[in-house]
Length: 158
Image (cartoon, rainbow, N blue to C red; front, side, top):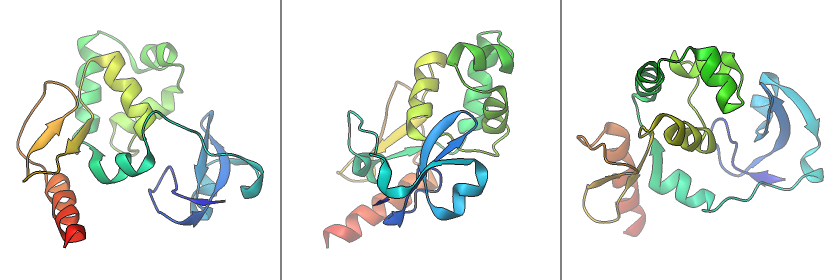
């Protein structure tokens, strides 16, 4: 199957279904080493979501300071990493790797963390100007990643 790797975001690559830290993901050949392959590329269907992958990758992005936001949100709730992981049904090592900045959460996990912690991790780039539309009430200056995405959108229109 051809699609977008859920770990690296690479597009139009052959996908493999791999179990990584208890989560089954569709990943490229390079990312198979991070988990255990559970099926061949042609024998699985991609997961559907309430919005398209195009929206995720082109109009939305994970904020640059996601690690600090997640750690601060967890600490405000007076939770240890193990406690938060258990409540989210995720592995403690996954939470640790995300909070330390070693691993960027994918969009479904970022949304889960946003709801649980009451924080903003996913931001959207609007189609007009360089206005940033956060997914909650946090707002701040336009990040480098948002500015780059906005420039790419403008270049596609030309």
